[in-house]
Image (cartoon, rainbow, N blue to C red):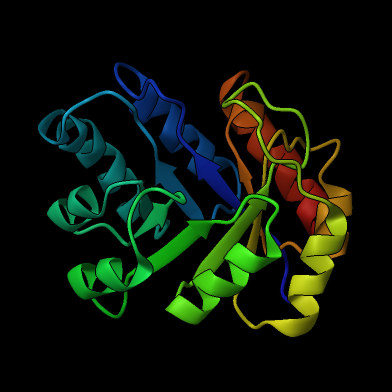
Length: 204
C-alpha cells in the first residue's frame, strides 16, 4: 500500500508573511499538494495572492490546487481544482482545465456523492469532517468505515479532512485514507514543527 500523504489547505488569510510560512512548511517534510482557499475576494485579487504561493509550490514539485473556482484555476494554470458540492461539475472542470488537471470533490460523509464524483471522472474524493474543526462549520461527520469501504471498492484516492492533527491521524491512515487534508493543525502554530510531526506519523 502506498504511504498516506499530507495535503495542506491554506488559511483564509494568505497575505503578508504567509508565503514565507508556506515555504517553511513545504521544506519541513513531504507534502503532496497545497490547496489555495480564500473567501470573499474577487478573482483578480485572488490571482494576485495566489501567484507567489503557486511559485513556491512549483519550485518544490507540490501540486497547487485551487478551491472552489474553476475560472481561477484556469487563469492561474493551476494543477487542479477542488469542488465543493455547489461549485460546479467535474465534467465542466475537465473540459476547461484539461485531461491532466487534478479534480477533487467534497463528498462530506456520503458514499453516494463519492460514487457520483468517481463516475463523473474525479481524480480524488474527500470525506469529512472526521473530528471537530474550527476551520469551518462542521455539518457532516464522517466515519472511518467510509474510508475502508471506499478503499475496498474503488481505485480513486480518498482524502480525509476535518480537525486532523498528528495526534489523532493514525486511525484515518489505518482505515485507508490516501491523503490527510490539514489546515489549522499546521497554521495555528509552528508550521514546520507540525509538518515534521505529521511526517513522522505517516512514515510510522
